[in-house]
Image 1 (cartoon, rainbow, N blue to C red):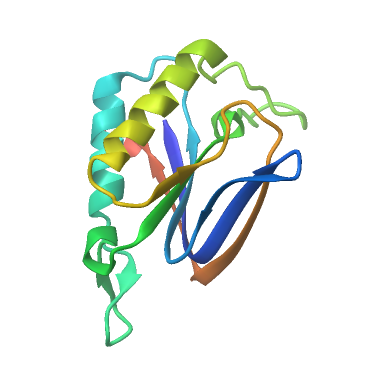
Image 2: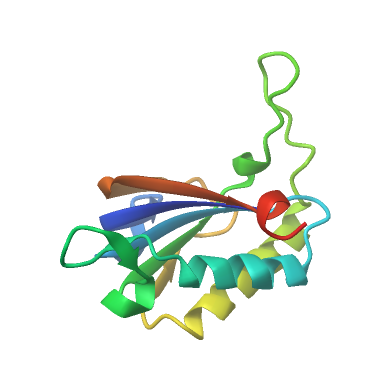
Length: 150
């Protein structure tokens, strides 16, 4: 499982010209679920996400977590984070979890986040989406379950 986390001043996701989710200050998180990922892994990844201290304090230091600034989350599914680019020039996506299972895992992560964060928005699983953002920093982090959990 991978979370690509971007600290944003604002972010929005649209599909077919309709706004699905929009946030101000917080994290835009792209979520990639791989075959073999479990709910236990999702719990650990979500806990890590919610406790990350990557927002700036009054001195410009990255020492605050999302809850300390009443930040928002925009969660977007992105199976391409499971890409395997080791061979050739065309990525393979065989590492990605099957769509029906991945959607359940994504929904589970969204619900876990909603228990801790007041404002959580989402994209639409499997949809063709357009994401726009104003990255603060820029500040981008990748959480990889292979490094955090296993």
